[in-house]
Amino acid sequence: MQVRDKLIVALDFNTAEAAAQMTDKLRGRAGMFKVGMEAFTSEGPMLARYLVDSGEKVFLDLKFLDIPNTVKGACRAAAKMGVTMLNIHALGGKKMMQAALEGAAEGASGDRSRPLVLAVTILTSLAAEDLEDLGIAGPPESAVLRLARMAQSEGLDGVVASAREVSALRKECGPDFVIVTPGIRPAGAAANDQSRTATPKAALDAGASYLVIGRPITGAPDPAAAAAAVLEEMQQSS
Image (tube, rainbow, N blue to C red; front, side, top):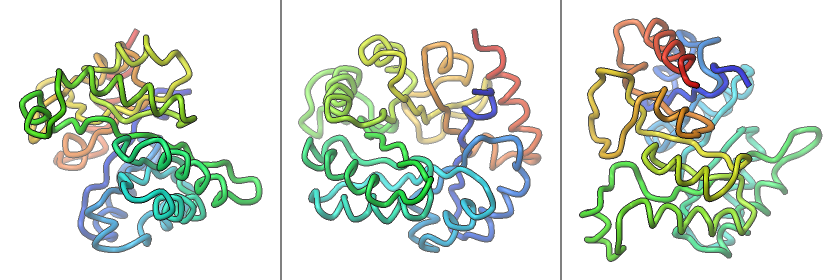
């Protein structure tokens, strides 16, 4: 896998047109594009389908959390769209995880592979005091590891987790477990609303499989140059 393939650019826009324009600026500089709640709620599946049809890989970041049958149907529909990766909330439990995998497999057709199904463990915006308010005892890392072990035991491909937990996750879940890491901030960038962040090099050194980066690239005066700088920083990983 090339360094570029490990970079997922978050298209956090409220119109498909704005997201598509950003994609055009970044073609060849990102291995995948993330379509999240804002764009999907505003425009529906239009953006994801456009990206897939134009040859780009898509991470559908909708964090499904519902009864198993509903999540199964949603994952089936996502797979039919041709996305490469999707996620569900680990807090949905084992039955929901199993249903997600079943739906994703059913939606893949022809020579198209089942999309990777990842579990969201603990949101990177949540710190220890936030978890305490939610009734989750202990530091974020403990909850992340507990949820990741459950996801792996149910056959999920990996997790979405903060860079601060990557090293422990890699040790706990082995070399083949996919770890997608948001909250990445290049050296000198603002943290914005993320509580548990890391630089691209630090996250890769810890064992992250993919890095999700949004505003430091898409909000830059020259997004292509910002992406190139991020790739250069990622290249320095040991």
